[in-house]
Length: 550
Ligand SMILES: [Zn+2]
Ligand SMILES: [Zn+2]
Image 1 (cartoon, rainbow, N blue to C red):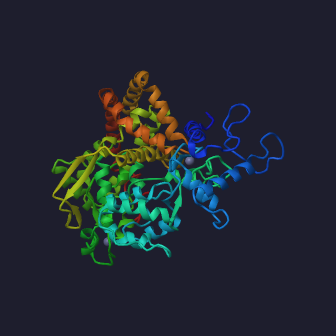
Image 2 (image 1 turned 120 degrees about the vertical axis):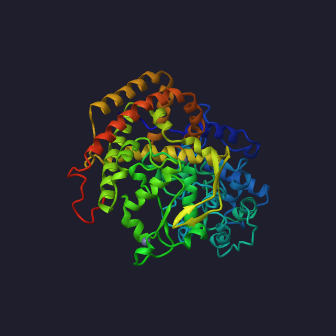
Image 3 (image 1 turned 45 degrees about the vertical axis):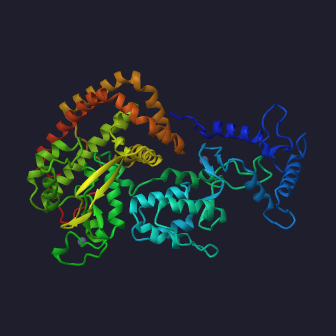
């Protein structure tokens, strides 16, 4: 069904334009209102005729007088007109006409120069995602959340330019933010860019209608916006797994930046060979097979980590069984049955690979179940599978260390929080999970092997029928989520608004959603039993020595 792309920015922009036209800073602006009572926002220089053909020139003269009145000399200052537009702007920020996103007009947003410098830092690397519309203050806070105190050592070098020397600042995020806002940003540093470019007298406020998020020159701004993200690695959100993903992400960042971890040897060091440091964080049980995203990692060197390739070795299975003995779940609800039936059958590399392959087909089946839920339009229920509530807590690890090449901490405290950062993390998880579900079915269809039997079919359809009944209460939110997540130029502000209300609605519907989920659990259990019975089938028994599973 082709629908016209809604414009998120229109209303916000209109409200803004009204405030500007009526603001005393723009008093006397020539031709503010057109013949039909509309705001004359634009004043193109190429009007050849008509009542408003001179608006452009008249407004330029208005800006000249304005410049003089605030002490900027148009004769000696070559950038007088944009300096004036920045100086008289009453709000310091404006919404984007296309998407509605509000950005500051100041040089507050990182650009490719800064990204290049950041990527060179060992603990940041290439998988950490950046956004051109993330305020520099938010970015340094996120770096601090993920990588800790080490960033304070690197910030002066990262931010210095040929014309700006960054002084010594105390190791405090608030002190850094104060410095950035009061001193650094006003100098318009080369490594930052403005949220909106000035262009007087073409637009009434002196700025382009499109912000940095939707720069009109190309679509790159918008597609980069879609990649915008807040934590370490998007792959962990692609498979809809369980677990405290906030704590797990935090610990992943620590493995990259904390010297406790990056001096540690690879888990396989005793087997001989080269294992270059620093190690990477390996989810002992791969996320792609349905294991939880949880805060425990095995330290593997780059070589061992890429060799592992979404499979499990017998040692991984042993480790996971030990964790389960402490009462901590390691695998997501949809893979629990197959895991519990077959974890005891793994005793060497071949059987480890065999279980990995079985779990992969279990995942294909689960993802196809999610797709049928998505096709039914039950977005609210799907969102209930994302454990968004864990973002309301700020995890704090006590005494981080390594034990036998594994991450370890004495205790984990979860401090309640209700910050913008929590909402952004939820928004990010929603966006990546839904867009990955869509992509998964575009690229996985050919190779996917879907298990379907009498019991699974019957339970899945019972669950879907229950969801149909629930649609009386969820329909409008379903549509809202659907339109937000399917939108190509998804608006970050809409997504955040959704992320902040969604947990409330999910908790109101908790009982009903649990009843639905019980059917899907039974269905996936039937899938798990069938896969377990295929343990000796040719599809899963190893055939080539270096078989790779994606
Ligand atoms: Zn925009
Ligand atoms: Zn290694």
